[in-house]
Length: 70
Image 1: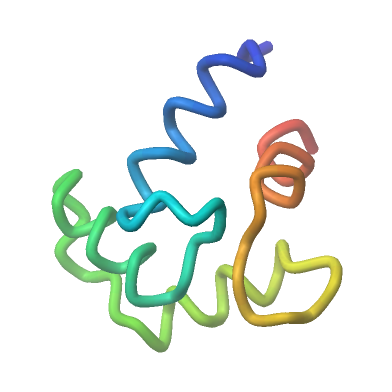
Image 2: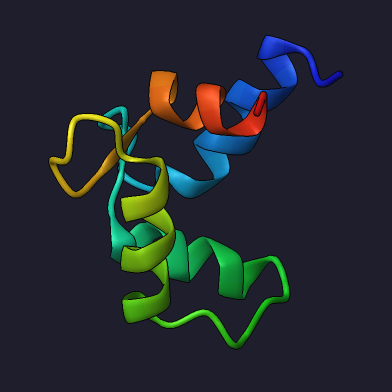
C-alpha cells in the first residue's frame, strides 16, 4: 500500500497552483506532463467527478487520498 506521504507527493504534482485542490485543468495538464497525452479537460472532469465526494468540482487531498486507497 502507498504511504500517505507518497500519495501527497503525487497529489502535489497535480495541484499546480498549490491551493490544495486539483481542478480539471490541473489534472489534464499534469497527466499530459506525465506522458498521458490523451487526457482532455472533459475527461479530467469525469475522473474528478468520480472521486469528488462533496461535489464541488475539484479534488481535495482527502478525496484524492480516499480514491487512491480504494
